Image (cartoon, one colour):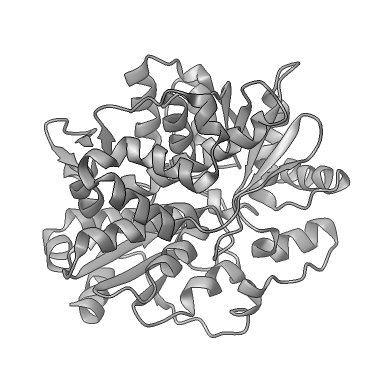
Length: 427
């Protein structure tokens, strides 16, 4: 697999180098020179999830890693279910929250951890990542206890749910966490500054586990195949797929899946009030407003890092950006969507509710669609309880951490402070 830097196309790397580097020169994203196309789609969709994942990921990686290695990475990473749940005759929910940290990020983080561990061997690495919610827990769980790997997670203090925070700030050992006195975009900017600083990047052997890392995106491609496989058992048509969108890695993975030949009719990029992309798709003008806090905090992103990849896919395949409908869902409409889903017998949380609402707004007559449910409702217990007048019980994974003390260290949104903290802990 060959990839190039979207900012500097002359910088070309293989998959192993892209995973290890995370970002290219000038913070450029790595993008595949060629997207493999899979044939015999009916046979592929008839397969079970794990064997199919080996085929899908093998199409990207077998030439470099060998199919046997790919198979082992998949077996270690993907060991939980992902049901497609029918909400009504037109809408189905792909539940991606049945992994160890109850969020879709488990797919990408666990596969990335296996890739990094395989490629690193005995070399020491530092994983530096920013989270607007679920990435932190997924990355921390995936790398927890791995030898020769330290993890540092930055998150915006007070802007993610307490239970989300507890899932990764209570682990200790090789997992280090920093509560930044700002928003997610500031956290992400500090991560990018660290990669631009040779002393930090080289001295601490830095890598990133954000969705900017290509290994995470490739893992996420797999669940789009599973969604369509389950969908096709009942509906012989290509679905419209609605993605709750923050940093846009999830939508990027869906576009990769379509590029590989997966039958998806249309995509909906559903955002909360941080609606940079919906406005851009309507006007053609990119204008990021200051990030605002919402009940769907994992999507509180105004400068989505993965958007250049979305445009690169469309350019490479000569697809119009109109393949994607951008929908902004405000707080009041998010609340209404939660209640409408509950009235249909489906308990959700704000991110999936936004995706469901986006799907409802975009589907044409005769369409049927899938919205991605990216987190367990109990991860947003405070919001769900308030909006639906409930008292959600905690699943065992959350019950285990609810009363533990956070080990996060508070820091200002200042790169020099972060740099000093990292060298004190990790050098």
